[in-house]
Image 1: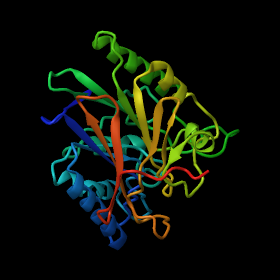
Image 2: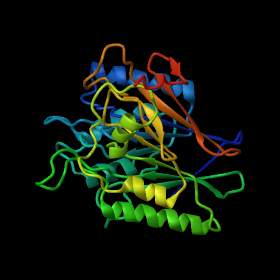
Image 3: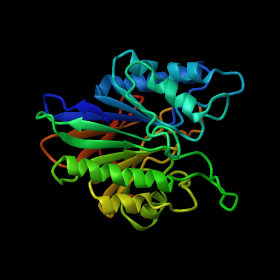
Amino acid sequence: MNQSMQYREDGTFTIIQFTDVHWHDGQELDRQTEAVMRTVLDHESPDLVVFTGDLIHPTDKADPILMMKQAVQEVARRGIPWAYICGNHDTEAHITRSELVEAVASEPYSVTRRGPEQLTGEGNYIIEVRNSEGRIANALYFLDSGNVSGLSSVDGYDWIRRDQINWYAEQSRLLAISQGGVTVPSLVFFHIPLPEYAEMWLEGECYGNKLEKVCCPKVNSGMFTAMLEQGGVMGTFCGHDHLNDYWGDWHGIRLCYGRATGLNTYRREGFHHGARVIRLHESRPGFESWLRLGNGEIIMQQEPNPR
């Protein structure tokens, strides 16, 4: 059974996307990251926090589970529900994906699930958001986008696999059936951007920053096509590339980067860390989104790509 959450009485549901926290050792840079999260949470008061991968970056000496607990404590101590999906760095030392996701799922206020055991990856699951009448108004899909390619003939990063895509399509179909044949408006969260993020930047109209290469898989597994065919997906949200925060509408789906949260990784002067905020409204379709930075600044309208 899918996890279920509820719209507020004012008809809104607000999500904060923290991405690439890269919690390391609990020392100064991690404390600065924690301050970024604290500022964002103070300003936005979300209903759900989503960590879209690379929550931790384990080293040879660190305890990954302790690192995870430290990384989420600013959210958990406020009693805010939070969800997690794996990145490519989270399980580089001393822990497997299944062990980490299992630990995350058992944490206070975590709404993370391991998902079907037969699927590739760990943490493929759905959260339903219900309206004031108790009906499913939205579905939030969480997918493990993997680490590195498992094929010797293909280098670079992994991709959402065919069995995950088939599972997503079937779940979307079943949700529509449960709602009398009406497709459920959905958001999809994963860590590594789809190849369409790069295509959109080159050929579409984008808003925000692209300050590094789009580090997507070198093969296209068809996740975007499946979302188009199923219908209902309003937007996708990824991380992975710490200096990209752009978004655009690509064939009717809004592809969005988050804003990198963690300071314990590569950075660029003047590019402040923060989060993406997503707001759903029970009374109207679509969603709003903006950036909230660690200095308190809000960016409601990102600049168009000057190409």
